[in-house]
Image (tube, rainbow, N blue to C red):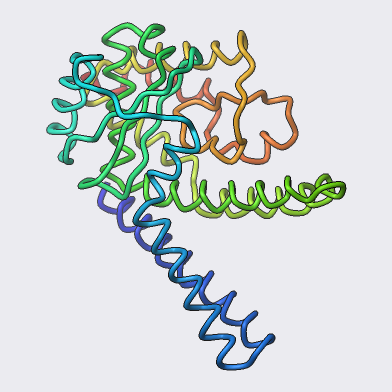
Length: 272
C-alpha cells in the first residue's frame, strides 16, 4: 500500500509539472520569457484549484448533496468503523438522488475525502454487500487513488466539455480531444488499483459480499442506460456505461469483472 501511495503522489507531481512545462513552452512561443512565466503560472494555479476544490467540483458535476446522519445512520456507522480499520479520517458522506446504483469517493487522501452513494445503491445492496463496497472505496482513499483520479477525471471532463461546445464542428473536436483525454486517463490510472482495492476490502469484509456487490452493480447496467460523462468512468467500482458506446470504451480503466470476481471467490482470497 505504501508503494501505491508513493506512485500516486509521484504521478500527481509529474502531471502538474508536465502541464506547467507544456503550457510554459506554449507561452514561450507566444511571448518569450514573459509568456512562458504567465502560462506556467496559470497552469500551476489551475492545478492548485483542482487540488483544493476538485472534489467539490466533481460532487457538484454529478449532482451529489451532503447526506444527513438521520437519513442513513447505518451507512455513517459503517463508514466510520471501516475508516478506523483502514487508517483514515472518516469520510464525509454525500448522496445522489438517482435510482441507478453507484458509489464513488473523491478527495485528496486519508485526511480529506467524501464518499458518495446513490439512493439506488442503498436500496439495491444488502448491508453486508454495502459494507464490502464501502471498504473497497475507502481503500482508494488510503492509497491516494482519489487524488490521481480527481486530476484525471477533471482534466478529461474539461477536454470533453470543450469539444462538445464546438458548435457545428463539435463532432470533429470530439474525435480529436476524446482520445487525448482518454490517453491522459490511462497514463495516470492503472487497472491494478481496482485489484488492490478489492484485496483490501476482501481482508476487511467477506470477499464474497464484495463479489456479489460488483456483480449486482454490473447487472444494473444491463437493465438501465446510465447517462453521464464517460470521463467519470474511473470513479466507479464498476463501469456503469454502455460498453457498446465508442466514446465510453475509450475511458474504461477497470480490469474485466469476471477476473475480479474470480479472485474474490478464490479459496485463497483473504476472508474478512
